[in-house]
Image 1 (cartoon, rainbow over the protein chains, first blue to last red):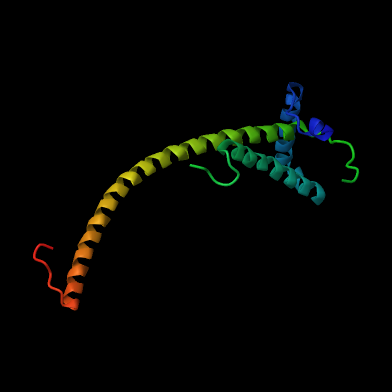
Image 2 (tube, each protein chain N blue to C red):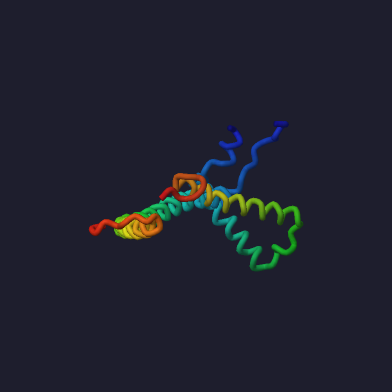
Length: 73
Length: 85
C-alpha cells in the first residue's frame, strides 16, 4: 500500500515542472546523440518503463469498453 | 514476498505519462465501443429484414420441393396422383 501511495499517485501540480524538465531531457539527449552512450542496463530499463506506460493505455481501453477481450456489441 | 525495499520516487514525467495513457485509453475505449455499437445496430436491423424475406423464400422452395418429391414417389410406388395435388 505504501508503495502505491508513493509510486502510483498522479503527479501533483507541484511536479508539473518536473514533467517539462524530464521531457526536455529526453529531447536534448535525442538531439545531442547522448542516447547512444548510455549503458545497456539503463537502456533496457528505459525500454521496460516505456512499454509499461504504453500498456496503461490498453488497461484504460479495457475499462472504457467494459470487457477484457473484445467489444460486446 | 521477500523484503522489497523502500518505494522508489518515480519521475513526474513517468507518472504523468502513465496517467495520461490510462485516461486516453478509457476515453478511446468508450468512444470506439459506442461507434461499433452504432454500426452493429444498423447491420442487425438490415439482417432482420433480410431474414424475414429469406425465411419466406426458403419456406416456398421447401413446399415446391416437397410437392415434386411426392409426385416422384407416387410414380415409383405406382400410386395415382390425385388431380388437384
